[in-house]
Image (cartoon, rainbow, N blue to C red; front, side, top):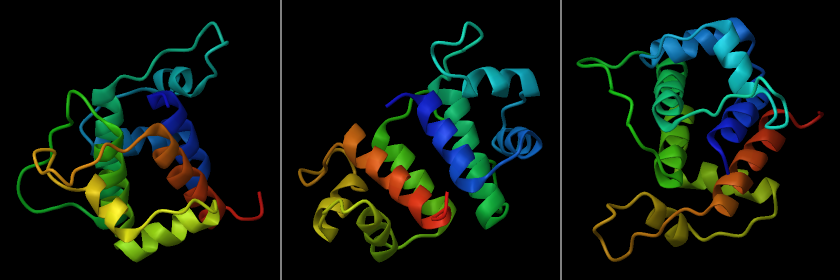
Length: 154
């Protein structure tokens, strides 16, 4: 699942306008303009399509946390230079202030069965033997379930 796909799904799910997208990127520490955001949201077939790298996506997710939860005391979080699906899932969990039960409910919208233990394995330290990589299928089902939950009539 590409970073551009994730950004497109989140924009649609939360119904963000261009100004909101730019603001969220800025809250996460990434200065962008409307043209850049527009190029990231285009389909790959479009000649003006530009790939979204991990650092700007991390900045967007950090900005989403700030927008949804408010500014945190202390230092601003620095966007990671590389992201994996586990980190993306964790940032979405934090931004939405979800508990494990909330996340399992979101998976339920897609009839995607996952146990609480499997879910918690995605949030463990990678050095622990219970840690599991979050695959594209899991992340996609979470994003699609979130879309069904927040935009059910579309």
